[in-house]
Image 1 (cartoon, rainbow, N blue to C red):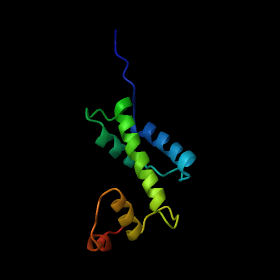
Image 2: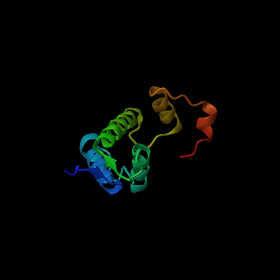
Image 3: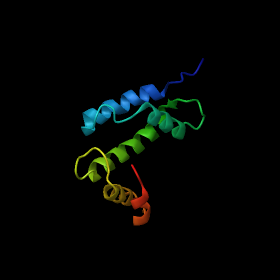
Image 4: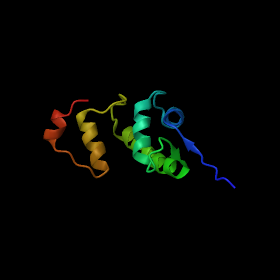
Length: 108
């Protein structure tokens, strides 16, 4: 008997993440760009198939959800983007520390 392989593509991941971003987090419907979803899949696809199986999707989803919640918590001015200080505080909350020098040369 053949094994059923269920996986999602970057386009399907984009659709799922953008729907969740709007419905659950009040973010915009274009929060996740297709290239971002391709990068997420590349990082979470150990078999290099260009798709995520259920277990890989579950792991990716937990990480994305954590970062969305961190973003919302530290976007103090509700601008939809981070300034250098918001970024510093958000990264610090996850255990990553950037020097002030690095933050001042960071352009985003």
